[in-house]
Amino acid sequence: MSREPRRPSVAIWKFASCDGCQLTLLDCEDELLRVAELIDIAYFLEGSSATSDGPFDLSIVEGSISTAEDIERIQTVREKSAAVVTIGACATAGGIQALRNFGDVEELMRIVYATPDFLSVLDTVTPITDHIDVDFELRGCPIDKRQLLEVIGSYLAGRRPQIATDSVCIECKMAGQPCVLVAEGTPCLGPVTHGGCGALCPRFGRGCYGCFGPMDSARPEVLAPLLTTMGMPEDEQYRVFHTFNAWSEPFRDQPRPVPVTLSERSTS
Amino acid sequence: MSDSGATAALPDPAAVSLAIADLDRLISTLRDDGRVVIGPTTRDSVMTLDEIAGAGQLPRGWLDEQSPGKYRATPSETATAFAHGPPSMSWKRFLHEERTLVISTSRTNGAMVIDPAPAAPEKPLAFFGIQACDLAAIGVLDVALADDAAYRRRRDDLLVVAASCTDSVATCFCVSAGTGPRPGPLADIVLTELADGSLIADARTERGAAVLTRAGLDTAATEADCRSAAALVDAAAARQTRHLDTEAIARAAAAPDDVGWDAVAERCLTCGNCTMVCPTCFCTSISDQTRLDDGCAERWQIWASCFSLDFAYVHGGSVRTSPTSRYRQWYLHKLVTWHDQFDSSGCVGCGRCITWCPTGIDITEAITS
Image 1: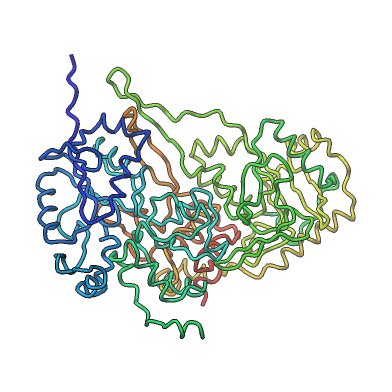
Image 2: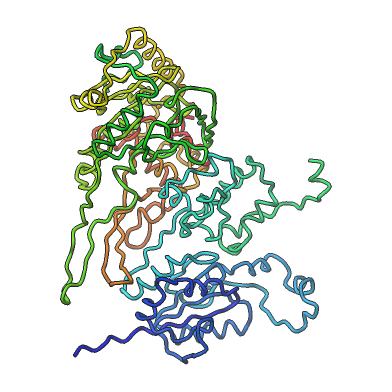
């Protein structure tokens, strides 16, 4: 009688984030039962109130580090886990909350919260890799379901995930999708953005807005003048590079334009 | 290509005349032969390539403008279906697919069994309306992919109905590349379209002649029509303004380190678009994947670009980290070392890399200034 091999135990953790990336696991509707056969989902508050103290074979981490407690907790996750994979723009780049890194956190708290005294946050929001060793980072805001399954599948097979790190343009061309930037003059961040979405927006006639962050050799400084010629004002360019992956280099380094007042813009 | 110059001979005296409606008979005959007919067609305001079932899907009445980093196609009053520049994608994807299954493995009674890729029963292809530059590109791929079984299978069964170019867009330079605008020797039939949309069909092989016969297309073309057709193609050739700078290429070959690559690379996004649209860029990488459902493994051959950092990844990192090194690699391979490797240039003058480069880097003047 053959003994069933032990299923690897998997924990899914949330830090500063919106929960959308871990929801991707539940979105694997057709594959979810098979995944649950192959792994023991030991800690996943979004899916089950049953928890485990670990240790875990694999931890999947969503969210960025925003508080002093987060720093302690992520160390514990690392200690309890044989492998750590981070998922999503928050965990891999700081996420949209890292926008506060560009301003004064005290001032922002006063603007947003009625009683900022109750808050205790770090001055900067940082990706998980700034704090612990991470075995693999999966990009996206949110991540792509097929890529999550690839990461889990590669872990189970003991191989490297087959996740391309080059541009969205490659995915457009592989899909036979004509370039919206060249053929329609639509501003598109595809040439500087990490693929993985399957060129979702361009396939629907929209420009890419960079939710997977910079590709492996992104050159936003080369794309920016092109966006200018397409009629995108510099402050808008600053905004498109400073969304979900604002704290990722080289998007982080895109210069902030001199603010233009509304009256100046209407007369220009 | 001996018969591709601007002053080539008139079509063969045996050339036949086709009305617009006859194109449907030609396409139907190819389909009745069991072929999948691929041709230019308009999608999302762009002339691209896809399977066509009839002449109604051809981009009749569409004109395109192409310039560095810019493509626009617009409907017009024209009666022609073939007076356009190279379609947005190249024909290579139908012979050399973006993803090809190489092998798969399965577990049988506890043992691993390697299954060669299933040679799926595929219908033979017919390329309908392929232009001279793209036809020459197939000749280039024939050498580069001579040992690729999937390519050979499709290529051996291919029937080619080429179209002479009766217009050139601003990015065309087939005359300078020596590939057009008259389709070269790989065509079975060459169509040349007149201004009113009627055509002259010139069979170049017995197979091509047999197709015309089966389609019942046997009205001899008049000498006047043949002269008009030749004049249109000559005019298309004369309209080309771009030329490969052979002196600059020779200088780059002799002293590659002396070329000012940085000046070009300053505008390079390293996005890889040029390689994806190039009709001769054939590089692939291998991806080993496992399936969750049954634990079986698959090995895929997937298009790759030398502009991707991973392309030149060896132990310890990529050997071409800078945009300069990657542009230099692509340019020198395409125009210089291709000759050493495959005995021809890797560039056929279609100009797609110029049109579809977001920043409009121009291979014909990249290193001249």
